[in-house]
Length: 285
Length: 225
Image (cartoon, rainbow over all chains, first blue to last red; front, side):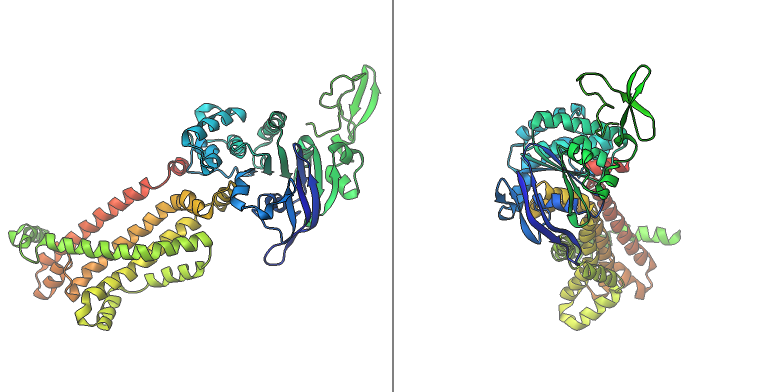
């Protein structure tokens, strides 16, 4: 469990990124912080591993303040995946994945063995092990980034718009992989994005942030979709638009689901057939 | 072409290969002055440049120093320091001149090598839990090395050139035949000296070019080619 207790952050120069922010992030769930740029979401994320120090307030992990821990040890115990993959250009894929293990004193041999295992976990071919990041596609680099984040088997995984810079097809693929990984690994994931569809797809809990990291609404995707807190949230999630505003219509051959523009998005099965894309109002594409 | 033939003949003359002004001795002096002064400059400038690059503090100073110092005329500085130190301290004065001339390129190379690294890479290095020292050795030093060697290359060539004119204050080195030949109108000797300095500079430059290329990490070179 991660807890923010009335955290504020003022950057040198007077920009107030975060004001009196409090939030409890549950363990073993994906919590998505979503907001437009300037909402302070990345600042919040980086306060968890002390890449940013709060001006006031505390951030606690399982009841202990991170401010009392050594930043280096803290960071090694928390996985961090960033938008540009942040890989070391002069390290091979294997060395990149093994970085944290090597920093923690694992022998090169063991670290590499574990790194090879992780390549499989994130769906990368072993033949890429000796390549350099510049020889990989954007999607492959992000997978390496995720593998590096998981290497030391941290309880917490921080993800800062990890799929923001890859093309939509690869992004969808990576998002599915993350959900699969989370089912297997059961980490506490804090995920930052500006993409509300991504938030709905990945988040067990969603925190919608306004300027100064003010929480506009917090809840499960269902809660937010069915009861947007205000017009801002409604507009942000596009509650009145296209695929979010579905209605059921009776047609000659059965019941169909129709979006706001009157286009048929799918069919509605009777009884409780397994949910298929198009029958729920979630962020399916 | 006659000049060249004369110069080659002068070089081949056994007279130039014996005695206290023998060419190997002059070459040795030239290299010794170069190596010693560049090493002293490295000790001063490289850690300073790294510190500026790592912390980002003192950037303006580094830029100003390396910019201004490059405009200083080497011969003028040499004569000024010899006059200030006094004629009995000529080698010391010359050494200080060489060191001062080598510092700007080295400072710029060390500092800009780190400055040129993608900030996101350094951010990531910190975020995965490297200590500042590990960030420096594993990332900044390694990725900044090619530009540092570039600075070393420029500094060394600058010193080789300046040691040549230091023969004017009776310091020996490969400038000796040039300085000695001019008043005597022995142009074969002057040209021979010039050829030797040019060859030395080219060889050293080539060695550094190879080293600089080899210092580019494999993963970074992979993008360029």
